[in-house]
Length: 150
Image (cartoon, rainbow, N blue to C red; front, side, top):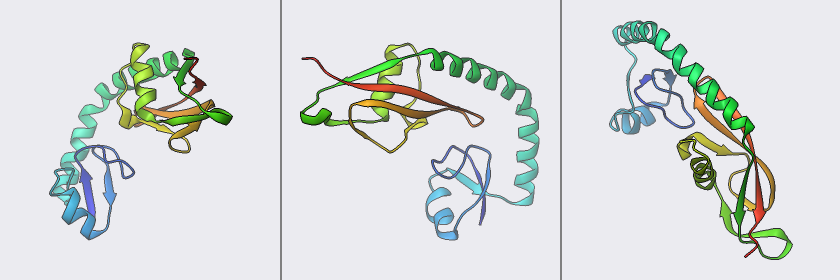
């Protein structure tokens, strides 16, 4: 089944992408939730026209995302967490904690656009997260998890 996405769907695609999915997933989840619509020939023509009209605005958005990516590469963030024996954390560090640390530095990035390689973090040390600022702009963001000195 071919669908046009109305919104970003994690692990599937971005808004205005034409994707192929299984019939049940499309009919029972994506369409009723308002995340997609059927990719009929007329809908594809309308989509092509909309994309053509958005091209100029898209260039400005990409330029802004690239500027933010350069600013993020300059940052060095250390996330403090309580540690136990062998530098093992009490709890874990996730994309929410990275988003909070970026917020403190003045960058508003939604947690759903941050993915930490390997999932949640359970030990101290250097790590990397992929931050998607735009469908074409993804920045690899290094950060460090350190033990809290309290």
